[in-house]
Every structure is written in structure tokens, then in C-alpha cells.
Image 1: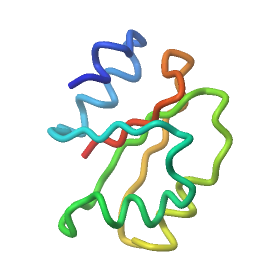
Image 2: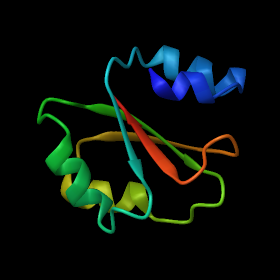
Image 3: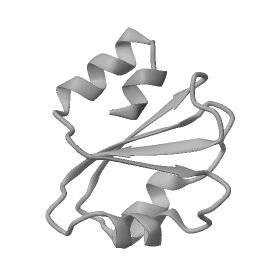
Image 4: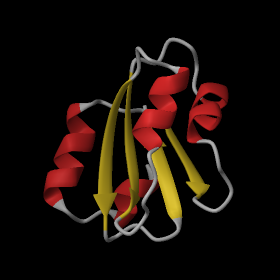
Length: 91
């Protein structure tokens, strides 16, 4: 996974490994305005858990936007200073 080449923080790497994620979507944060619609369109319907890693300075209500579209989806949001201008969705 590309994000594991960037993330050096051991705690974040441990969280990622605990979820046994096998798929990764990376997107530039400036390209998406409605994260709920983006996630609904991008993820298969059977996905129940996702981990989102985003830049530390990125202020957005991603979890709420996703829950408005997929209320049953478990969303873990991690802000990382190691991520710049991209957002990673792991599932």
C-alpha cells in the first residue's frame, strides 16, 4: 500500500494493520467537495469499515458527510502530519 510508504508513525501503522485493509484509494483533497457522495460512489456496497488518513491541517467534517450517506459504515479518521494534500481511504 502506498500510504504505508509515507506513514512512519508506528501507532498509525498498527491501527492500519489491525483493520486488515486490502484496498486503498488516494485522492487529492482539493478534488472532492462532498466526501459522502465520493465514498458512496467509490466503495463497494458490502464495505463495513474504513480508515481515512488525511493531512493534519485538513479541517473537514468527513465522518459526518459519510454517515449521512452510509449510516452503517464504521469510519476511523486519522490526521497525520506526514500526509500532504492527499486523503487516503483504506478498506
